[in-house]
Image 1 (cartoon, rainbow, N blue to C red):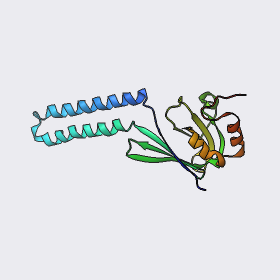
Image 2 (image 1 turned 60 degrees about the horizontal axis):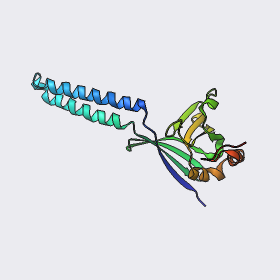
Image 3 (image 1 turned 45 degrees about the horizontal axis):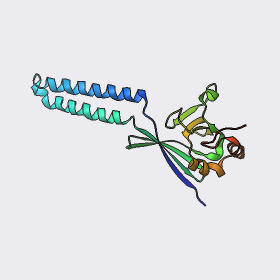
Image 4 (image 1 turned 90 degrees about the vertical axis):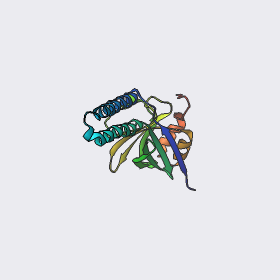
Length: 184
């Protein structure tokens, strides 16, 4: 029987995102306003200045909406594909990996992994400090030793369960169920 699970997670807006949008919009307003003010003075370049004003507005819209990021996890028969969707107009495959290649998988604790070195780090979650944020470590043929941080759900966990290495399945069954409290 084939297994297929698809999860969509929207990245939370950060202060950095808001600051970028404010800077971009203010810059566009400044450029467009300056271009429109110069039209009476440089009337022979009026069409070019008008085009500059419109271009600044369109460019600002594209840059401001690019801060809206979603991550899509597609699990098909133990193969996990993670895509980044930017402003609902651009999709980029971040990684594709078989769950059987996971060497570690557990709830994400940044301090626990801070001293470790990874060739690739992929943060495909709503926020690093959010609920049900997990990590997986695996070796990828192109990306090397990879740390993937993602949002775990019961549906995704259930879909992965039969494809994970036995040690990871055992560890998860003992104490790392999403939403459960850890007991020793």
